[in-house]
Image (cartoon, rainbow, N blue to C red; front, side, top):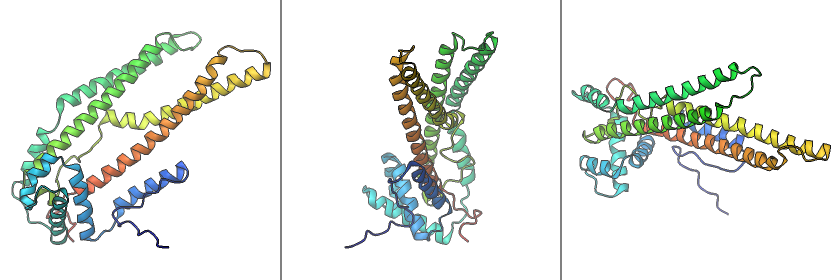
Length: 294
């Protein structure tokens, strides 16, 4: 009976079996392995080329293909790009006179200032709704939830989600513009992108939603399950139908849905971080002063 071949060193083994904690632990281990991997130039060049080929759009690949003397086949493009990257990793690069000024101009043009302003305004709206909710709670004599808390919290949620969406759109557009700059310069993908602010950088909106979203869903799920269980337990103990008994299944099912959603979001965020790390490594600048050629 033959045993399956191990995966290449730049493609860690993926095993979805096992408890969630172990799966997330393996995911974190894969990310650390990508960051700390000590690959041979051929292996890293192949891995970087595959990541870049998948990241670039079809139009960007077609624009850069003539500099690689590659045809229209994706596999051929990836192989030629790997060869270009391998030469840079093994031999280093000579200084390019206009590279620093050109990338600085490209970064200024890709700032996405209008979208960043919209994102900041939405975050301010969310913060104002949160402050008003807290202030109205303290204004009540019995510290109960005020009647206007519902609309305020709904506005906060919508504003936060919109801010995250706008921030992600701005980051995506910035990345595309900088990749457009890279594919317009022969050999630039092989050397990498010497940007001051890394590509795929999260702004405040997406970062807040990604960090607080799963935590809030986890807390809401636990509270819902506890509330539903308490209602059912009280109704069984006193042998009479208490208030909101019919809502107990809703609380229980809603709590389970919240917990499952939180776990899925954490898993997806881990996959996103792994993709970000791979892409950052693929476009890492290998220049005369980077010190990587040593």
